[in-house]
Amino acid sequence: VPWALTDELIRRAEALVPGIRQRSREAEMLRRLPDATMKEVEEAGLIEALSPRSFGGHGLGLRALCEVARTLAHGDTSTAWVVSFLMEHNWMACYFDMSAQRRIFADKPYLLAAAPLQPGGTAERVPGGFLVTGVFRYASAVMNSDWTFASTSVTEADGSKDQYTFLIPLRDVTVHDEWFFSGMAATGSTNV
Image 1 (tube, rainbow, N blue to C red):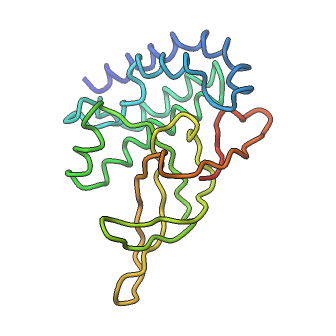
Image 2: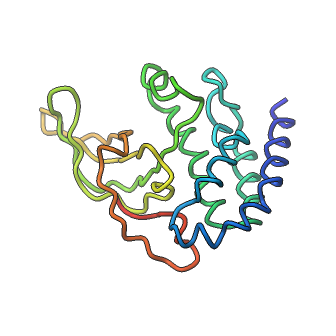
C-alpha cells in the first residue's frame, strides 16, 4: 500500500507541473510560492506525505519525498525545493514528544514550517517556556510557512549546555526579508 500511495502522489505532482511551470516567473518575482501553487500542492496531499498516519498523514518515506520533489522540479526548481522542505519538516515534527505532536497536528495532518537548523542563537528559560534569540540562517520555505524550527543551546541551572530544537509560530519571530537571488528567489531562504 505505501508504494501505491507514493505512486499516486507522484502522479498528482506530475499533474501540477504545467501550472507550476506557468507560475514560475510569478514565484520568482514574489520571492515565495504563489498562493495558487500552495493551494494545489496542499489539495494534492503532498505536504503530509511524511506526516504520521495516526494524525491523518500518509506516513510515507524517502521515496515519496525524493520522487515528488524530482517531479515538481520539472515545473520549477524553487517549487520543488520549498515543497520538499515542507514535506520533510513534518517528519522532523515527529521527533517531538506525543503531547507536542498532538498539538502540532490537531487541526490538520501537516504543518507548514521552515527549519534553519544551524544553531544561531541562545535560549533562556523564562516563566512558561523559553525566550529564543539570535539569527537563524537559511530558513527555506519561510515565506510559505506558519512556523519555524530553531536549534540552539540552552544553559541549564548547573551551567551545563544542552541542544534544543524549538518549533515557534512565525508570528513570534522576525523574518528578515533579505533573500534576493536570481534563479532561486522563490525559495525564500532568508534568515529569521
